[in-house]
Every structure is written in structure tokens, then in C-alpha cells.
Image 1: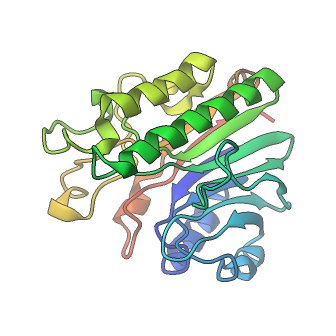
Image 2: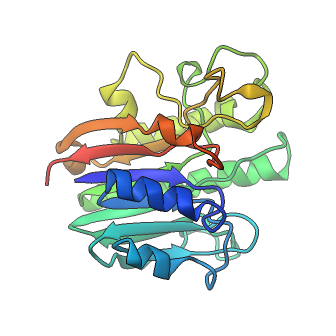
Image 3: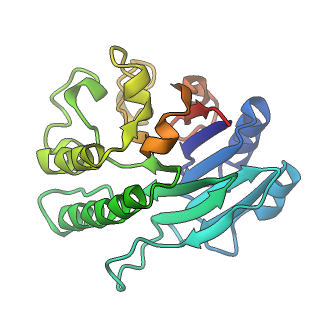
Length: 257
């Protein structure tokens, strides 16, 4: 079974890119982020014609998350993180698919920092950690996949000082990600590729794609029972180089059924 995460950066603008990738790789489960589409504008019909059922939480202009399932309908279990009833940003959706609980994550960027956006980022990641701890305690096969907007270590970014003040690399953000791993979640890409950077994001500016000046922002964290079934992991880098591409590339895992 192949499970992927893809920050599509506007699902309607890049629908052709998404459909081409789905047709070429045929993932069984896909977590999408940054839909930039309202609930009503999500391209459900086009995805159904491609063979995918979907659940999603849309939002105008920014944010938005979805879960796709090939040949199946995801069973929606949650449309937001618990812990802040006033948080109306569409950043988390959760569903059951083929015996796996799947969370699609689009964590806050947090820039500029310091400031209220960074404070919100850290609070959101803290809420995620509380929810994730409950999922671990429930001992269900689970994956939390998406754009965490965290570069976990200096190994996960190209050699540079230009990002030093960015929210993505701050010690507090990295500590929040590390706390998830301390709970028992497995970072699938890093686990299977400990010695090779696997970037998932290349900014549009300053020829960063052409220079391979990338960052690893997109992660698939597996609960212990699902981690036992992990077979492979990788990044579909070539998708980032296609015309009209998102600034992210899909990251994926393969697990035993």
C-alpha cells in the first residue's frame, strides 16, 4: 500500500499536475495540503473520475487539507485539532482508510518571527502533540502526514545561512517536532534514509529548484504498530520540475497490507 503527502499549493490551479501524478503513481492514500479552495470549490468530481474518494476541509485563499483514497471513500473522523474552539484555520483533517487512521496536516508557517504568527505556530504544534499522544495511547495504526512547516535538523536543509531567522528552523519549532518523535512516532523518510537528505520543498525564488537548494518540510510520522509495516519511503522529486508545479514534491511510503 502506497501512502503519500503532497502540498499541492492550490488544488484547482494545479489540478492537471495532481491528476497526472495520481495517474502515474497510483497511490492508495493521499494527504493534500494548501488547497486554497473553499469547501464548495474542491474538485471532487474530477478526483472521483480519477478513481479517488475524498474528504476535505476547504478555506478561501489559504490553508485547506484533504485525504484521498483510491477506489474507496475515507471515513471522516475529525475536521480540526482539539484544544482551541476559536481556531477556524483549515489545517487538519482525519479519516479512517483501509484499517488505518490518517491525519493530513498543514501546520502554520509562523513567519514573521517572533510575533503572533509564531506564537500561533507553537501553540498549534502543542495541540497536535496532545492529540498525537492520544492516538499513540489508543494503539491504532496511524499516520500523521503533511506539511509540518518544520525543518527538523540542519541536515534537512541545503547549506545556507539565509534561513537562520525563519520560523521553519527555529529551535522551538524543532523541539516541537522532536517531542512527537519522543512519543514514539517514526519519521519514515529519515528512518529509511538516515544518510541522504530528502528535500520536499524548493522555493520559487533564486533558482532554488535548479540549484537543489531544498528543505524537508513534508513528513510522514507512523505510530508504532504501523511502523512495523514500513517497507519503503521516498520523494517524487521530478514532480517539482514540471511546468506549473507546486513548490513542494510528494513524499510517500509503502507499507505492508
